[in-house]
Structure formats: C-alpha cells, structure tokens
Length: 115
Length: 111
Image (cartoon, rainbow over all chains, first blue to last red; front, side):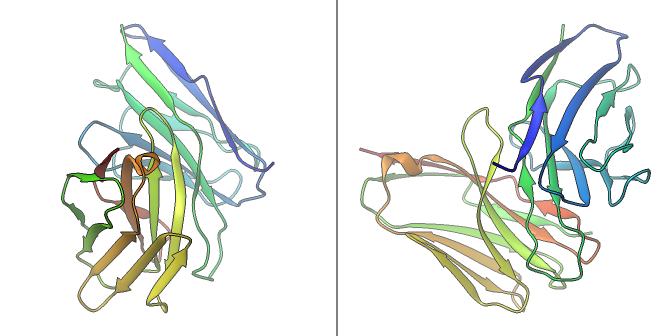
C-alpha cells in the first residue's frame, strides 16, 4: 500500500544535540511538508519542498534544517538552535498540480522529547 | 495570512446523536478545504476534501459543506458512535499549496 513512513515513532534528545527525523513516501507525490504540533494548537508548517533539491521555509523554520535529495525522502534535522523542540512532528505529502482536487497524506508522526 | 478557527474546542454527545463541527477561515481565496481525523498520539487521516468550486462532499455518515463567501465549513457526522471519538481538524489550502490548520475539535461520544 502507498503511504508515508515516519521513523522513529519516539525520539529523545539531549540538550545541545542534533537529531534527524526520517520521512519516506511511496505515493509518487512531488511535494513534501513538515509540520509541528503542540497541545492545544493547530499544526504549524516548518519546511516544505515542491521538487527535488529545492525547499522553502515555513512559518517556524528557525532551529530546523531539511534536505530533499530524493523524491521519496524528506528528512528533518532538529538542531541545538531549536530552544523548545519537544513536540509531535508530522510529515505530509501531496501532488503539486494546478488541479484543486489534490489532498494531503500524513504520516503517523514522531514524538520528540528533550531529556 | 490565513487564520482558521474551530468551534467548539471540545464536544461530548451521547451515542446516536448527530455531530456538527464548525470551521471558519479569514481568507475566502482558498484552493480547497480538507477535514482530518486524529486519534491520540497518531497521525492525521483524511476524511473529506472539498474543492473551492464545490459546495459539499459526502462519504458515508460524513458530510462537509463549504461556503467560501462567508468563510465557513461544517462537518456533519450522522448517528455518532463511540468509535467517532477523536479530534477533528480542518485545514484550508491557499494557492501556494500550503495548509493552514485550525486547533481542532475534540469529540467524545458516550456509549
């Protein structure tokens, strides 16, 4: 079945450490996204990518970095510069088309905790 | 910037009652609007997508309406069941393909 795989499901980060969250999709979608979810708040966009080797900052990109070397993969690195990284991280993908009938598909998420 | 609001934040109903979830958005120039379901600790599952040219979409017991002029969408769930207990999120898509999310409505259906 086509879908999005995020790993790991749970991740613990020590102060000053960089960690990388994995996101892989086999839907042949062009666009991929990273969102952060905090309790009581809507999802906030961190980074997105429309095509390979190109990506754009979202609303809360500070302290995060991404790469898009393959169409299927869009890893997110949470750097030590991110002061409050504890959150639930969701990866999504969609077609990149002028048609408005595209939808987003989400992964199952990674819960990151600072210890 | 698109702002999306969902009211109420939480809702508790007895089994069998119909559910009405509201979503409002500030910029009517949306591309489409999508409703998602999220179970605790899980990712988002897409329920319905309404294109900007459509007024509603239906899937089983679920029906979603869209009124762009008033900046509103409503999700109706008929004959609720305990398995419908979850958080429901709406998201409006702009012409740059980015989604703006509401904070969600947490639904509890009591058996």
